[in-house]
Length: 361
Ligand code: BGC
Image 1 (cartoon, rainbow, N blue to C red):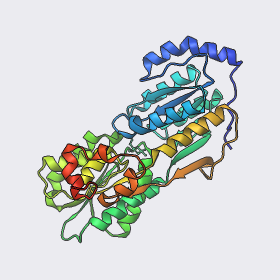
Image 2: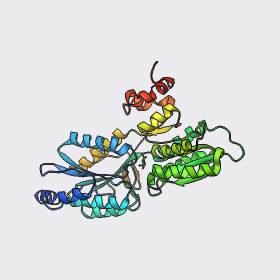
Image 3: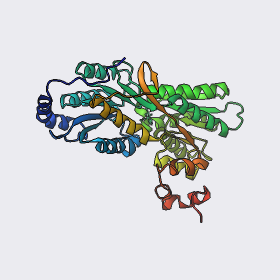
Image 4: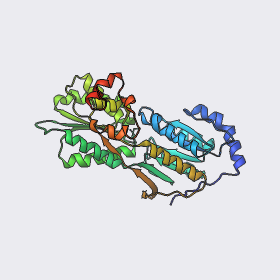
């Protein structure tokens, strides 16, 4: 059972002095490290993995910071590793040196991040695995979505849209980063459904760092090889879906085959409205980020933390993902306030919004 209560390193006064002394150095080598002061009740390091995927800066970070601010005078030290595991290791070490009392870590590399956890554990700093599981060390809490279900939702919606295939026809599968444990779960969930239906897979790819450019480059190569035999593209998230759609457009593929996604990025919702992307998966980030903030503060206060389940022996909460096709937009992301109709139906999408029934004439 992980140690849920952070051990204090020395006296509070000593720790605060250390924070003030090292903070200037730490902030110069980490991206976006917020300032702290000796007046705060404690510090939380929020370490996010990816600067190319919209969700982190648009939702995870601001919602987390907002919630922490509601809970008290705590400091949030924020870093984004831009898909670089070595950089994330450095950011975590800097945060610990700067006096972080808890790490909320969304790992670039789910296996390599175990060394961050071991180092934090050795210094009595609890770690919350945020969105992606960390495969090693004592994790105090894990908050994510049912990631296998994400893959199943993508694949089931995709099957509904794929027609009967003949001859050499089949699909492409663009998976996520090979170092992300979630990507493995999305892949497994999707495969379960697609394999059971016997859909032919022309080729599949694990996209390094979830890079939209790498996804685009790979899909472009497959279009050269398979041409019209490509009847659909399973893409694991909206960023890679965007890359796949750019490749299809650049090759003048018409009509565009169905393309899946995940995250309900604004750009993806607009592509869905315009008919360029078939579906996405909405994961309500507010409850995820707020729960992580609540748990982080509870750990700092030495309070007990509840969890409905365990994963790898870690107290865990897994939230429920939802599939979004054009006909679901109003009842999901709009109803939930994730995006407003004003966000989605900008002048360029007005007509498409009317056709989709989101706006009246
Ligand atoms: C997250 C996705 C995200 C992807 C790329 C995954 O671990 O669950 O929401 O699109 O990483 O950052």
